[in-house]
Amino acid sequence: METPSNHRHTSLRSQFTTANKQRHKLDSIPDSSSPTYQENLRAAIAAFHDCWQRAERSAIFSPNETEDDISSGDLQYLLINHFLGDLIRRDCSADRKVVLQEAQAAYERYLKLLDRYDMLSKADSDLYQRYLSERGDFSLLSASDATARRNTKIARYKQEQELKLKLEYLAQVPLGLEQDDPASREIYLAEIQLCTHNTFHALDIINQELKIISLMPLTSPAPQPEEQAEDHRQRNGIPKDSYSERLDPPISQLMSNGKAGPILSKYGKPLKPFTLLDSRQRLRDGVFKQDHALPTMTMDEYLDEERRRGGIIDGGGGQSSGSQQVDEDDMEKADMETMKAREWDEYVEANPRGSGNTLNRG
Image 1: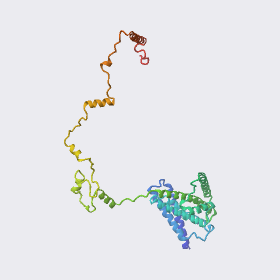
Image 2: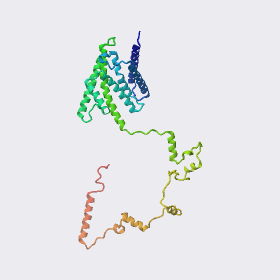
Image 3: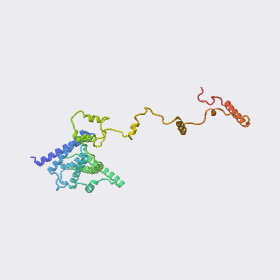
Image 4: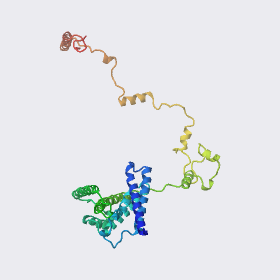
């Protein structure tokens, strides 16, 4: 005959199997932000929440027990809070800070349970004690020493690969039919080691993200429709008690949207665009005047201004265009002109017209 305790244990096993199927189902959905993924994610979170509550009610894990007292079939339930924290981190539908804090709490419950059973390795136990002392400032990597940061990354990567290879090797070993089979127990312990390694990495990422969120400016909530309507009335100078269900606005409001009506409201806010002028005399002077631009200077003033700007060149005319007359009595000047004309004749005879064009000849 099945006792109530055995019935609760069987119910927890079936619920844990269902939750794991829903968790693995998420791997087949590529887009983690799609509504389908988020809907399946919430279902998986609810399933693991139910598993955690069932495990608490059935008191599977007792503070008076040790690791050897836990059966091989019950070791898998130690991972409930780890899976729960991993799933909660993927939630995109709620406040990000609240999501990270819930995931952090789930990871902390997982590590606390392993520490109570003394199932953490020496390195993981030291990391857990450092996390408890630092918590909000916890980080796996050194912020000041680049060499130590690089060595830590390499060491943790090698450790993760070794744990994955060990888990893959143990998964290929055929298991016995009994729940307390030594091979299945070794597989569960190897999976716990890998999940513990990933838990510290997740806590490091959560702390970094929480620091970034704390530096972000606070966003003011969106105004309600009533606040928007009141702000609209204040901007337009409309009193609060002037609400009416008329579809057509009053004449005063229609005139205020045009050229007529007051410029400022009684609160001192402008009701329509306007232009500030220097004086009334400017308006008075512009009443009787020509409708075209009048000259502002005489022709002489214009020519003087152009000459000052360099737009007029003095000289030229008939005096500059005519050839200069050579004095016949100046024999030296006459010889120079004769030699210049002779040299020009010799140049023209030596270089006939078109002799330099050697490219376009037919």
